[in-house]
Amino acid sequence: MDATCHDYYNGYPWWTSSYFRGYFTPPELAAMNRSMPGLQIYRAKIDEEESEPEKSRIAFVIVHLNQVLIKLQSDIISRVSSNFGFTSVGAFLALSLFVALMLNPLISGLFLWTLSLLGPVIALFVVGSLVQFRIYGPVTNQSYAWGLSPWPPLERWRHFVIFMFACAFLIVLFYHHLHSLSHAFYARSLQKAYFDRGRDWDWSDVERNPYLPLILFTGTVTDFRVPGDPTPITEIFISPLHTGSERTGYVPTPPWRSLSKSAALAAAASDAFIIGMLDRARYRFWLEFLNLRMGDYILFHARPSPLLTRISQYRCLTDKPFFLYGLIPICLQTFGLAACLTSFLLSFNSSSCELSKYWYLVWASILIFSITVSFFASRGPLEIFLHSPAIRHIHMALRYYHTAEKGPSLMYVTDGGVQDCTGVYQLLRRRSARILLVLAASDPDDQMNVLRETMRLASDEKLASFYDPRDPRRDASYVLDDFKEIPEKNHFVLGIRYDIQTGSGQYGARLTGRLFVVKNRLPPSLEQLPPEPLLTEEEILSKQHAWGRKRWQDDKILQADLAGCCCDCCHVNMCNVGPKFPHISNANQCLTPQLFSGLCRLGYRLSGDAVNLIAAEGPLEEEAWEAQLQR
Image (cartoon, rainbow, N blue to C red; front, side, top):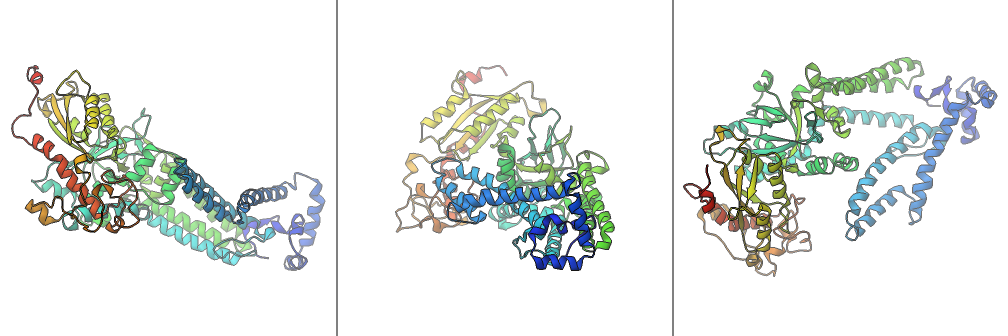
């Protein structure tokens, strides 16, 4: 009878005890007796001890636990699924998702709730069934997926586990590359779509170009907080000169950092929405399971290592910070996996059980040591354990946040829109006199909650307050309400009053400013426009616009009817579904060429007046009452 070291109890496999004779046929019992000398005597001894509960406790627990698992899996799930005409748990779960999807229009959020609930349930039953098969297979003759046949499956079990270990080795060694696939795809998409000839730039190129303005990207750190902060959400800013914030501290921006990577970090909407706003275990499960993380880790070193500076010309290496600083913990974890694999292979030989136990303890010690030390590795040599992608993943799953006065040397950065989705906040810090905001958030009802939140945040931080420039007795919120009531209006203006206490001489003497806001919306005068031809480089450079010309002559479709994603064929077929132009959902990250071209043309039409006002030469025009104020 096949058995490993983990199956032996009192010198015999646990299923050979007389407690389990009823699970085997007479030929199987005869085979056991022939292959294991002394088994009859051992069974007789067990029968004598049956009346002693202390000595029969282990066997009782084994049998009882198996009965509980079988009852949980079969009596509950299988019986419920059989009521619908199915006998498969998988069919029942698939049917549950389909019903939830059909009822979602009637019960808002039902599908998302069902999906978030069934995800952990499916994972629990897969793992539970596998453990049940491996432990109770000798007495239940259970079969399982992946070619694992009824007991004895040790040969196939060995091959299956070795294959899993091979996958584990690859995952540990290339964890960060696998974990950042969504981010890498997003950064490449931005690079190909918006960069000249699809060529990426780094921050040193931006710094050396005298024609480029100061570019600022706003991100959010979701795994760090200052002592006393109630939430682990900290803003971080990336510029050609420095990276950081008042809470994290500032470090020089590495010259080799990719501009497309920084842009992707500042717009990593998926995990920012879940980690920053819907921080629930079930949402995190699907975020990790589907590998939809669009954010990524960045190095936050005041003084990068000489080795990193030396190889900075190889962007494929410097964009992967774990390659350098996480080398020691990754090698340690790889050795731990090798020790666990050695323990597993030795367990198939009964004479090597002690050696198998030794290698298992080596693996367990490495695992416990690495995870335990990582929670105390804020500074010093132990900080290298924070550069292990697997350990940081565990921290994120456990919602552990690095708490210190300054940020760690490796931080997870995601979308900056968790707090300020406009970018205005950083210009308020610099006390800018003229700010042009193109508000493109998904807001079909013109509520402008994103702008209202930024104004509230600036007021709470005592950076600035806002007012109606035409009548300072009116609160700024009334200006937003007035704009909502006039659909043809293409922009509005807010006055800015900077706080004297937060200012300093280096920002200039002005204490007031103007915020020009252009809102993404379709005025009634443009609602009957047909889909216009796609923008071309020649049209942009020549300024000879193709206003009003139809792209599709035979289709009676208006520009306001456009929806869909990916390709333009969606608009003239049955796939033109979803939110309509120009209020495309932020979840649609794959705009069609026609939608993108239409949004560009609409932005050009709406922003003309605001651009002319803000670009006017000379001092900013003031109201009469403002000119009389003492500076």
